[in-house]
Each structure stands twice: as structure tokens, then as C-alpha cells.
Image (tube, rainbow over all chains, first blue to last red; front, side, top):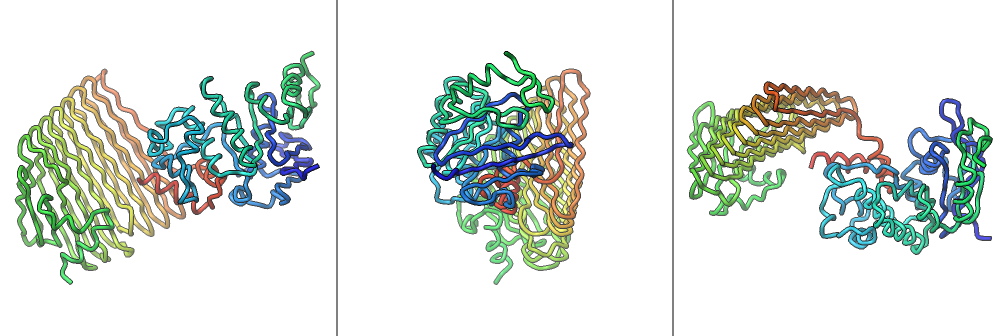
Amino acid sequence: MPTPLLEIHALTFEADHHPILDQLDLSIEPGEIHALLGANGSGKTTLAYVLMGCEGYVPSGGHIVFDGTDLLPLKMYERARLGLTLAWQEPARFEGVTVREYLALGKPDYEPAPALKQVGLDPGRYLNRRVDKALSGGERHRIELASVLSMNPKLAILDEPSAGIDMLSITHIIGIIRAVKAGGGSVLLITHQEEVALIADRASQLCAGRIIFSGSPREAVDHFRGRACVRCDGEVCNDVRP
Amino acid sequence: MSDLDDLRRTLPMVGAEPSILDDTSIAHVVAHGHHILSRRTVPGLRVEMEETPDAIVGKLIVEAGAQIAQPIHMCFGLAHPTGVQQINIDVQICEGAQARVLSHCLFPLAQAAEHRMQAVMEIGPGASLIYTEGHYHGPHGGMRVLPHATIKIGKGARYFSDFSLLSGSVGNLDIDYLVEVEEEGIAELSAKIFAHKTDHITLKEAVMLRGERSRSLIKTRVVLEGQAQADIVGITEAYAKGARGHVDCMEIVQGQAHASAIPIVRVFHPEAKVTHEAAIGSVDKKELETLMARGLSPEQAIEMIVSGILR
């Protein structure tokens, strides 16, 4: 068994004394695409924020080991420098910052055109555009993914990367996810789209802050459909559809 | 070294090459205090400037229909720690003319000095003026800078202004612009200011949309650090059918700095519309975290966000 790239054990995060992540266990292998499924409010995005170390997302218990390093004492940018990154569900807009600059963050010699092409955007049209409100939601999403690709991360957390993307462009998103893997990286893929989830190597279902199922993507999708949590009220999957 | 050499040497601080003063195809005026050190004009442009004991007084006229291909450079400044400069200038862009004016205000050593600009600009029917004013101040602060202007934009005319003060510490800056826009005229006023130490910025820009289908945008970006203070007022009043205006102010406050932004919008015609947005606060948390998730330290991330806003 290879040593997992990411090991999460008994991770607990509370907001207003309510457990959002509840003794959560999860591991991701090197080079693995791991899909994370779950109903709205099940804790998927919270897990992403806790892993990345976003402000206000300090867990009250548990451990996270990333590539052999205890992640929790580290600041956000220190985690990123270890090879961990996050693509937000609603990416930020940056007034005045060009796509070229955004993709080459901290890497002055980086050539950003190939990453743009991989997300289906013409470098000639986009490199000098600003990463601001003038971009559509779909364009901004794709640039976010190109930015993740440009980091060549060990683990990319992609929070609903296909949200707001037109159907024809889903193939570009899938291509990017596979490109991270081809570059030796792993992906934690938070998604509601079956077509995207099925490209994963493994998948887990999150419910009320706990992983309640792990298996093949097909099994996980079927499990999610058949036993989706309607409302847990703290009781993991007490209330399920038959 | 002469005062002219001192000012020339400072031009790169506002993005201009000193060699522009040697180019015979480029018009310019260079004034130190109340002395005109150099001037050149080009066909279609009349520059009538004279020295008085209390001010430099004059006119800059672009003749009707003239299209001035190269920007007109106006370099004003003081090369010494103290002094006063008062510029009284009338700018006339006659009917159908087009020009771009780059005003370079250079005060590299100023510690207790004053720079006053009183301008009246008239953009004739169908004419266009792009006016860019870049300030460079040394690290000392202590200046009083008062650019005041009244701008009249004729029927179908266009006026775009871009004021920037991005390096050095100014002291007190008090901008007061009043813009009147006639039928189908366009006014866009942009200001970008980075205030440090104990700088005090007062910026008042008022646009009166008098004519039908006239349009305007006031866009202000101010970043404050140290104990700097900024009070920004953006006023747009629409008086005619189809007039459209927007006021957009963003201020980023760091350290002990403090800021206010007051957008005032008034509409006096049922078919006119004016909108506004204002945001004051620290650097946006999501922008900051996005950059840190790419490996930038908080300091690097803030620098990138701020430089983008002030671009």
C-alpha cells in the first residue's frame, strides 16, 4: 500500500456549537482523483476550507497529514507551498490583474498559454484581459482551473469546478482534472455532476460531516442517489429515501 | 544641474521618457515654479503661456478640426524642498479637434511647498480630450496640492481624465473638479491615489449631465496606509432625457488610515438615471485567500491586489 498523500483522521469542525465536520476520516492516494459527493450542507465546502486553512476554519479536533507533514499548524500559503491548492466554487475577481499575471503568480518565467488552451480559452484573446467582473462566470471558472494547473499541485481541491460551465465545455474541465493527475498530482473533486464524478478513481459520500460511503465512483453515485440524506439533524442518515 | 535637468530626470517616475522633450514632433511645456523652462508647439496647437510673479498664466488651444497625433506634455513642478507654483490655464479643444494631454506634476524633494492648478477646459462640439495627470512626490510629504478645474463638454464631445498619484507622500491633496456635459457628450473621470503616512486626500468630483443622452462615469480608487485620511465625494446630477451616470468608488484602508466615501446622485428628469457603488474596507478576504492558496504570502498578496486596483 502506498503512503496516502492526504490522511484525515477524526476531523471535527464546529460552527455555533454545531458540528459541520464530525469525526471525519478520509485518505487520498498519490495520483488519485477522489470525488466527494453529498447533499447541500453536508460539509463538502467546509472540508475544502479546513484543508486549505481558510480564515475561520480551524478544526476543534482531528489530524490532517499532507505528504508526511502535519498540516494544521501551517498557514494557508505555507500549505500552498507544500503543493496543496483550492479552486473556489465562486472564484474571486481581481480588478486590474491580467489573466497572464494571474496564471504566472510567483513564477515570473511561467508561460501561461498552454494552461489556457487546456481549459479551452484562446490565449490571444484572454491573456491580456483582466480577471475582473467583465469575465463571465464560465470564463472565470476556466481561468481558475488554468491557475490551478499552472501550480502543478500535489493535491488540487476543486470545489464544483463545472458549476456555471456550459455542457460542451465540461470536456475541458474533465481534461484539466486529468491533466493534474497526468502531472503526478491528486484531485479532491467536489461535484454534483455525475458525468464529472465518474472520471474519479474513487469517490466518497459525505453526509452531516461524516464519510458514510467510499467506493468506486459508480457505486458512490448510485449510493448517493438511492440513499441521499434528506435531513440528518445530527443523526447520520437517519432520514433516507428507500 | 539645472532645474530643467532635475525635472527631466524625474519624468520616468510618472511613466514618461525624458527624450520626449527633445522630439520636435511632440509639443511640450516645462515650468518650474513660475518660470517656463522649455516649450514647443506643433501644427494645430497654440500654446500661449506667460510668466507672472504670482503664477504661470496661459492658454492651450487645439484648433478646430485639428488632430494632434502625439500627446501634448505639460511638465510642472518644483525641484526644491520649498516653493509655490500656481498655474492658471485655459484649455480649449475647438470643434471636431482631438488631443491627448499628459500633465506631469513633479515634486521629488518637496517638503513644504504648494502647487495650485486652476484650469478651465472647454471641449467643443464633437471634440475629444484625453487628459492624464500623473503626480510624483518624494517621501517627505508636507505639500499642498490643489488641482481645481471646471470642464465644459460640448455637444457630442468626449472627455476622459485619469488622475494618478501612486508614489511618494503628498501631504495634502485637494482635488475639485466640476464637469458640465451637453447633449450626447461623454465624461469619464478616473482617479487612482495611494496615500501614505499622514497624507490627507480630499477629492470632490461633480458631473452635471445637462444634455439629452449625455453620459458620465466617475471612478475612484484610493488605497490608504499609515495614518492617511481620504474624504471622497462623487456627485452626479442628471437633468435631461436619456442622461446616464455612474459613480464608482473603492477605498482600501490599511494600518491606522481612515476613509469616507459619499456618492451623491440626483436626477431631475424622469427618463434620466444615475447609479452608484461605493466600497470601503480592508483588502477583500476572498481575493487575499485565493492568492495565498497559490502560495503568495499575505504581504505579496496585498501588494498584488493593491497594484491591480491602482492600475
